[in-house]
Amino acid sequence: MGRRGQAGPDGLAVVDKSAGWTSHDVVAKARGLLGTRKIGHSGTLDPDATGVLLLGVGRVTRLLRYLGLTTKQYTGVVVLGTATTTLDASGEVTGEWDMRHVGLADVRAAAAALTGDILQVPPMVSAIQVDGRRLHELAREGIEVERAPRPVTVHRFDVGEAVEPGCFPIAVTCSSGTYIRSLADDLGRALGGGAHLRDLRRTAIGSFTEDEAVPLDALAPERLLTPAQAMRDLASVTVDAAVAADVAHGKVLPVDVVDGVGEGPWAILGSDGSLLAVYEPHRPGTVKPGVVLATGG
Image 1: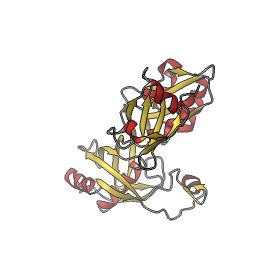
Image 2 (image 1 turned 135 degrees about the vertical axis):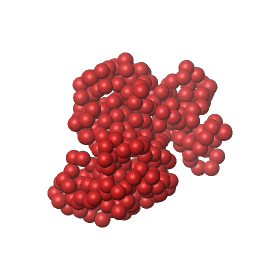
Image 3 (image 1 turned 90 degrees about the vertical axis):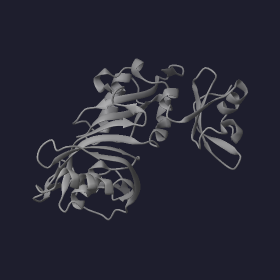
Image 4 (image 1 turned 30 degrees about the vertical axis):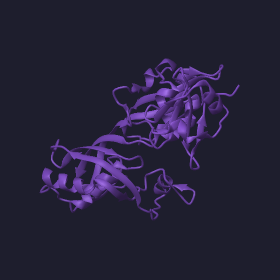
């Protein structure tokens, strides 16, 4: 865990969120546990959902946007035959269908058609803003608005044997911004009826998995990952003292510094392995600082 003066802890918390907590609730609790108000989260989880929630602490709050660039993994159960207002088990029933004839092969075929690059309409219960209002706020007022489909990528959409009649477990790997509830709803529609999602769990964000996640009550400063570990999914470059000094002053660098190391963004590390900055593509032949953590002398 890195520190700067007495400003409080810096690092990344990989939390295993319990059901019944909003992501905002988790942040509020973590502020008390870690003794700092400087905490934010990457990738909201629904209150009913469980699993991996990443919290940026201290200076790592500035790095959260880079954590949303990676793939995410989920598990859940699709319940065929019933649609709800929220597309999950917490909503009111809006339609019912007899889908007892739908077998595993049918569900897998429909899931395959929803795999790859697809267009997805965000649900009304999402946090996306339309004309300055979040969709879930409008939904609570009984207002439904048109939502433009958004491109997402579903890398994997596996369906298992039914755990009870009409209830099929799923495992999904997808791009950031994909709504698993909407996938369940689309799956039901594709099968000639309706469906909703239950037991949603996020098992991974990039390389940060449920195996290293800690329960919220166990969160403490010593459980934080360092800023460098927080950016472990980015391509990284270790620089010498001269370049490190330029980085600390936020200078634009020649692209040669990161030549041959991916397309960016890049984690720029000092000789001691600490994170100095994250750089991004810039004008031809150069890269620019996105976030600088190092301080200039």
